[in-house]
Image (cartoon, rainbow over all chains, first blue to last red; front, side, top):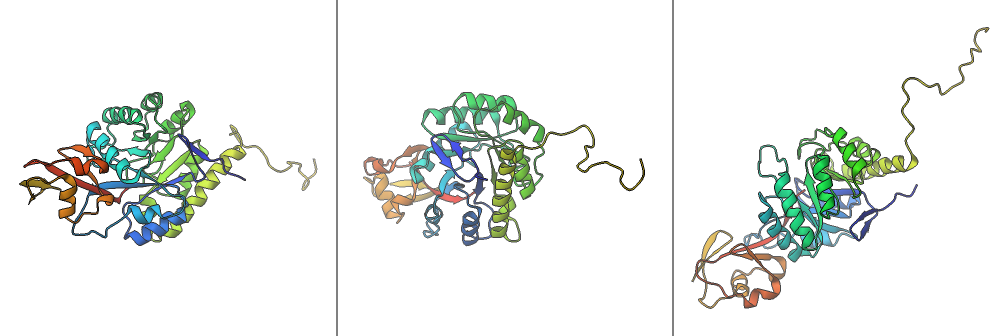
Length: 260
Length: 66
């Protein structure tokens, strides 16, 4: 089955798996895992340039992977103003219109600040970015972010790096039902089956980082996630059977082993 | 004059531009994005951005992140 492409703004992506580049043991493994995932949107962060490590170049090798577009994040920003500044710097560095707005002021839980996220998204949409806000799984906020022109919404499944899966499934279903823009589950996914479940419930894509980076074999896990996302999307396109209230036989119930 | 570059003090010639500062520190201009006193200074404008003593310069590049 052909998988429908993911449309974000004016851009079409064949892959519905987005991956992050954090937490890998080294850049060589990260690059192999990104390639194995088939992801076309790949997140990176910004940090101060370290003159003691002038060869520490991440954007170059990533940009050379075929078909990869960078989606910088604003991680580290605690306010909308800081996030806007990071976004401007990121666009200067790579020219990508995509920006993952990520504002989590509290390092203990890393939950996104909805007010600062909304303010930053509004400014960045006006500045011409394709804005991809990381957010709590809040249907009201998702609608507000859609209304101001975000390219997608990216509600969390559970806390960043927790591996607790789709704890917010009920809210995600409401967001999916009400959204006219792609809904991408970002954060919390641990297993490929959770990624498939997100796709089956109607999400447009999933963003996975820790689950791949912290696997025993990140490259193999990246392949597993790619297969799961395709399977989940194919299943949705195929149309899931309706749920029944009780049992419904799949074989004839004729009692041929006894007389009736 | 003394500037603060990525949080550390450093001495530069009085008439230095932002492009000069990056050059003195041997920072590849194409690989960084820059802030001066929290304002984004685009690559094309660095040679015209004249520094003043006490200015805070920050240069950023990409890092791994999710």
